[in-house]
Image 1 (spheres, rainbow, N blue to C red):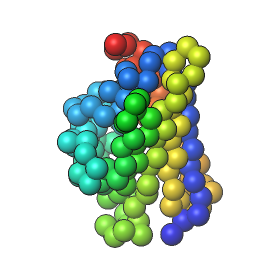
Image 2 (cartoon, rainbow, N blue to C red):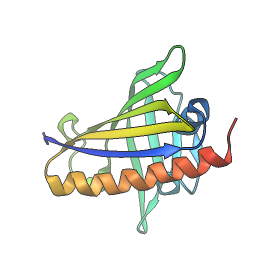
Image 3 (spheres, rainbow, N blue to C red):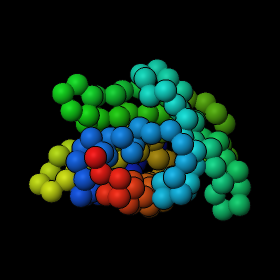
Length: 147
């Protein structure tokens, strides 16, 4: 298992409820996750699938929802994530854990995303770049679609 963690974060000029809705919505948005379609019922233990095309290759990443903290206000989503495009076998040791924290800040929301289980610093840096791009898409959608 990898010891390196990829971290991406972004500030969004939208309330937490809007950001949460964007993060937990099904369907495809071209701005987010390379336009992948997201499918889940967003309950703890449920499967989550991301389907799309990246660099001319079809992909279907998958994982499970392992934590949703949405008591008084939504603030944490934890998912497992596996991508067959990694070339690795679909085994638990090859899954990442994605931890999204959604915190209220003056003027909006800060999203912090950590991805664990990166085998090298370079792999973590590559993942950080991909997740930063994904969070930029969440920002675009959330700021456009405010409650």
